[in-house]
Length: 410
Ligand SMILES: Cc1ncc(COP(=O)(O)O)c(C=O)c1O
Image (cartoon, rainbow, N blue to C red; front, side):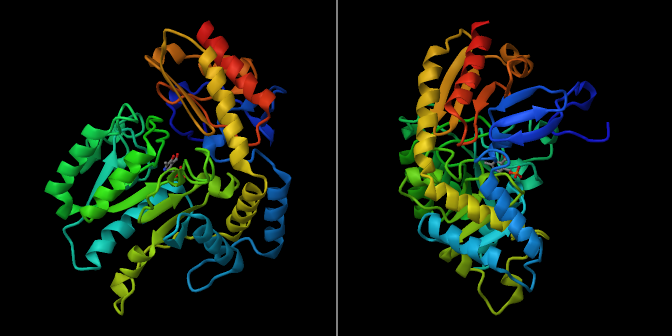
């Protein structure tokens, strides 16, 4: 096997469909079959595949120049995208650092947070609080912050967590978790640089939802005890939860926000770490050592920036938030009709629908069954999740839901 595929025991890879063409929410395979895509390529292709306005934007940029580094040079696509991101993200996030993937953007956020303190002479604040069921990517430090799971188990003997925050089981009742969090801060905040959290809904690590009030309360405590906040919106950014950013459900603003995936509508890997003025100013100095020493080769890639700018323009012009709320209500209503002893919980938020089963065994074979029914779905552990493109047609969404129902009735 010349390709080493992700998250898969290669010994039992079996046959996997070869995509010949992808358009809208459809995947067309070399063997002549096709499937409706329920997860929009790890929830990145928010406008679906081969969307003409995005294709045009990227082709236009290719004819101008496809890459120029940001080391000692700059260019309009990156300048314009940075300005746009400052404009659309919550007030106070004013400084954009580009990188090429969500994991790297998380690493940059962590470096910013730790160096923020050391630049001010504080070398004690180096620890991080991460969340139970969190996921922040597959690079080493990002793995350390992810919850123990399939993703990190091979390294559990190497990865040592600093502190773990509980996400309340009942989103409305978070008193105990908040109290524990404050106790942790009272004792350990002199050694803690930052809290990293996926706001409102966690994704690959467990798809757990928490309330905007909980997020606000955590933020207030972080401010009180001098701990920075990093909101990882790689999965939730650009509409996934029904608002442009999940943070917009709450009142708080983090010190650092991380965006990826939907930033470029899944066209090219790209990401952004956006810092507040407070964080940025801690790097301004006559001393070179206080600069942020990071610079991915493809940061601010012009093709990525051009497609991101067009994607944001489309998002804003076509009132995508309404489209996402329609997806939400369609999933919500249909989920009510899916009943099975195997189901532990159902959760819906924006264009995310999750059916959590009690035992992983009850969904073995679901992927193959869905493909036979012309649907592409790919559960993670005990979670069957839908995260379609926002331009999915209602008929296509209903086909996906019918297929899930058929599986659970079977
Ligand atoms: C919340 C979150 N953070 C970070 C990442 C890592 O992004 P990437 O796969 O682009 O490195 C992901 C990917 O799924 C994610 O969902």
